[in-house]
Amino acid sequence: MYTRQSVERADSISVEQQAQICRDALTARELKSCKVYTDKGFSGKNIDRPALQQLLADAETGKIDKILAYRLDRISRSVHDFTGLCSRLGAYGVHFQSVTEGITLDDSPTGTVMAQIMMVFAQFERETIQRRVTDNYFARAKTGMYLGGRPPFGFDKGETFVDGRRTACYVPNPQQAALMAELYERYLLDGATLGSLVRWLNANEYRTARGGSWSTLPLGRLLRNPAFVQADAAVYQYLQSKGATMNDPVEAYSQQRGCYCYAPLGSALPEKRPTTRKFTDLSGSFVTLAPHAGIVDAALWLAVQHKLDQNRALKRSGSGSHSWLSGLMKCQKCGYAISVVRKPSGMHGHYINCGGHKRGNSICPGRSRVLTLEEIESAAEAQLLIFLKSYRAVEIRIRQRRNVRANQLEASIARQENEIQQLTQNLAHIREVDVIHIISAQIQAAHDRLAMLKAQRDALLYEGPSADLEPYFEAVLEEWQDYTIAEKKKIAKAAIERVLVDDNAIHIIFRADYGS
Image (cartoon, rainbow, N blue to C red; front, top):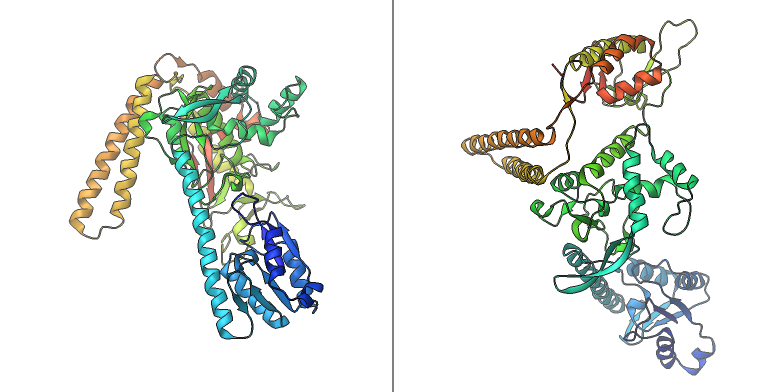
């Protein structure tokens, strides 16, 4: 006989009770050779259970001729799995009986059909329960209720009320919160990395919330966590751009509260949330304003996010030592990265390899003529120096701290961008020419309003004296030829987004428009 109990509850029947009910259905002779296979603490959503697998192995070797279970769903709650088990047991010549449901799985069509009908209802019950749990989980998440788990470093657990209901919440831990605020500041220092912060933390004997040493992965996740930020409209826009579903209107982001970030919609329970890309890809996640106050200024938090984003984008590229364009060059034909090949003896230039062409002519036909790295660098250098020269006399103003008016403008910008997105989506479904013209005009007008709002925001954010950077640009222009590959690479990555290599032209995409 087989017994299973996933969770021990007061309203559930224990494995001992299941076994006794099955024994009552056996004859005295059958009881003498009866063996009980028990899986305790295992779900019925799949058949990966040790006792059940042992039972099937014994059935296959002829040690079993009859299996009893309290109910069908003790064996499985999946129609697909149960159908497969029916076929296996039939092939082994093993009879199956559900004692309380009076169903016998044997060679008769009626027994098999009835068993599978019962399994449909068992699977439906499991999926209904799972959906109720999921719906309740996210309904609580939308209101800002605490859903369990350990608070991140920097916070302790406290209590508050949300919509009149008591719930746990984050409460800043004075020492840890002060350290986190300092870490955000330190990360923006020139040359600072996650690794340098970890070394500083461990050298000064700071310990994690669990009392261990620091490492880069958990530190990076902490800096990503929106629980720390005094969230404003710009934070709303950033999190939304990462794919998150925002539960609160942008007007509620008033530079005060931190944020909860909940599991992706596809995972039913919090313990099932993926962790490998936590806070870097928020597709399908919920973000809700939390009851607690943030501890890091929004502008500082966002500056850290942009640096982390940039580091992530460059993490696996640009490590080559042959060129200051390593990691920036892409093939114009296929979009794959271009790498540099070590220069063969007797050759006057380095070869280049297209990643797409290495995967086959069907992806990229390759170059129609041989291009060398030196040709590409020469063309890119000329355009880069012209770009830098255009900024030599441009006033670069220092960004100011956001005020209430700037945050209101950020909120208006977010609403305007949502309106443009909605109009663009509507346009895709329209076929009537007159309606297309009307919506296109609305989109253009919305873009004009968006540009005006951004201009007003920038006027507020960049008030004050300009930074005198002309000497620095002048030095780059004069000393470029003397720079090492590493020094040139640092400048190139700051100014250039990518370099597209074609047969007869080099196209450079800069990170900003020309200065003048």
